[in-house]
Structures are given as structure tokens and as C-alpha cells.
Image 1 (cartoon, each protein chain N blue to C red):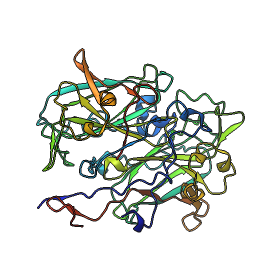
Image 2: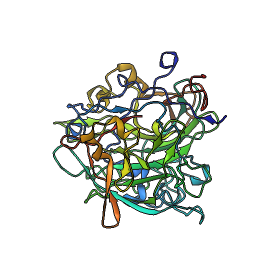
Image 3: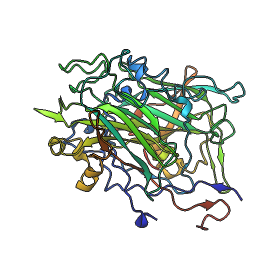
Length: 200
Length: 243
């Protein structure tokens, strides 16, 4: 339990506006140090190579933007995602599908876009979580990275145990809508329609 | 009986910075105002991706030369930064991915949005990465970054620092922080540092001069340990109270 621990978790500090240099250097033209940026897609190896041809599941695109409390676009954020495979299992280290991806928001438009596969339901002995992608957001002005979940509007989310914890008026902040062949998931950091964030 | 990774220990929000810290102006419009939603233990995801050494290049942990032309090296005081990644139980975390980034010796980042008047160093990119060994240890060779001004308030200066991104074994352990240098008088003046309220917590982010690892006529050394959230004792799925 917490009281018996000898060490404290290191305090978080903001990723700042130059997170790209460390995490996605090629994206900001810091080239020639790493051959590729890590996590360019969860259907790829961490260095960008397809892991295998046996990856199964529905190919989907998730795209979105992040807004601050004044409605302004956040263009310096980095987002990471973590999800199960199409069968609802978190991938093994050597699986064809890594389950993890990383993207920098576009420095001008603020858009992030993930090409991935639709995750499956996570069934346990006590409940059944609807398909979702976990997402983690860091940026200048965010002191501790923000965790939330992306659910899908075309799934039956009525029995999901996490959405059930959220007051109905805020549940839609976690549900990606279908627009033009993609799922759109916009994040509002503060204020009206503020996205629900988790203490994991 | 399936062994399942145990839940992570609860995060101590008195030790971590609050979201809204008005003296750090960028937090004012980016801090959520609603409280975080706590998930029940049975729902918490305790897994995460695994990174193998195959992602690393030979000079990824040597910032002095990893962007330098042959025969050249980065400008500035040469330093070794080393330490351990531990969990809250004091156990070394092997296989943790560490990614670092920093300004050059003049306080300038190699980034299209940094237009500070200090010059870029053609032989320095400011990024490095490594994976902890079986005991959780890591090291980087780099140059001491410079302090630099920023627009938070009049005459605002960031203390010398190196950014650290840490990936343990669970997505919920994910951490980004900054390492400061022992004795830097700008630490006490910086609103980003001061988002952390407890002086002991700030001390945890302050690397200590380590003359035992300094090498004569070559480089100084700083020691910096990182701590990730720990786990409770092992839980088995068919007897969740059995720990």
C-alpha cells in the first residue's frame, strides 16, 4: 500500500513547446540522429517498419484537434495512444500489432491523425468494456500528462463500465464521431464541453 | 489461474504539480477545471508497450557526437548524466525507455519555433535516448545546457535543464519531467519548477554533482535518479483479494 513505499514518484514537469526534439525529432527536421521517429503507427514497428502481414482487424483512421479554454488550437502537443488488438487483447511484445503510437500535432493546423485498427471489447469476469483507445496528451502548459479514452459512436457503449461512471452530459466528450471515413475525436482541455480526464 | 500484472500504486497528487498554476501562464488556459475521474481498480489498464534495444542506434546516448560531423563534437562543458530508474518500492526498472532533449550550451533549441538570439551549434541536435539495463541504470554523455529567457514574465529565465521522457512497463506509468542542476540559483525563480510545491520534491528533480563518476581531463558527472509508480503485490484473477 502507499504508506509502505520508500520512494516517491518523480514529480512531473511540462513537456514544454520543444518536446518534438526528444520524441519526434524527424518531424521538426532534426534529421540524421534517429532513422525514424518512434511510434509512427501502431500497425508498424516502433521504427516504422511493418511488423508482419498477419495483423487482423478493421483499418480505421482517428483524427482530431486539441483546444484550450479560450477555444484556441493547441499546436505544440504530442499525443500517444495505447489499445488492444481486434480481439480485445493487449499485444505481446512480439505481436504483429504493437498497440502503441505517437503523433505530434501539426505545428500549424493542430491536427493529429492515427492510422490503426479498431480495438476489440475487453471482457473480464465482471464486465465488458466497449472498444476504446487510451490516449495521453502532453504540451506546454500541461504540468502532468492527461489520460483519457477514445470510444466509437458506431459501437454499443451502453454497458461500458467507465462511461457509466461519467455524468451523461459529459459522456459524449469521449466518443469519436464518424465523419468522411474517419473517426473525429476533438479534445477540449478546459471550459465548455471539457473532455473527461482520468486518474489511472 | 492467470497471473495478471498488479494495479499501480495511487498517484500522490500533493507531490505532483497541480494542473492550474497561474504563475506559469501557459497553464491558465490549458489546465482542466474538472477533477480527474478515478477508475476502479478492476478497470485500470496495467499493461504497456515493450521497447527492445533494436530501436537504438550506436550513438543515441551520446549527444556530444550523435549529430556532429566526423571529427567534431558539440560545444560546451562535457558532462555525464547517469542514474537509475526505480519504482516506488525502490526496485530498479529494467527496459525503461528514456528519451532526453535539451538546449545547447548557449540556451538555444534546434527547433523551428525557437528564435532566441544565441546561435545554433552545427554539431549538436539536443536529443538522445537509451534503455535501462537489468538493474535499471542508464547514462548519457552530453554538454551542459545553457539557461535561456522565455516570455512568461519580464526577465523570466529557465534554469539549466534536460527534459526526460520515461516509459516504464505500464502506459499509466508514463512520465515526462525535467532535470535541474544542483546549485543553479535560477531554480528558485522559475515558475515551472515551482509548480511543484514541496521543496523535497523539487530536490528530487535536481541532479547532484558526482565526482566519483567524473573523469579527469574529460568530463564532469551528475547523478539523477527517476522514480516511476510502483505496483502492489501480485494479484491473481480468480482471487482478487489474495495479496
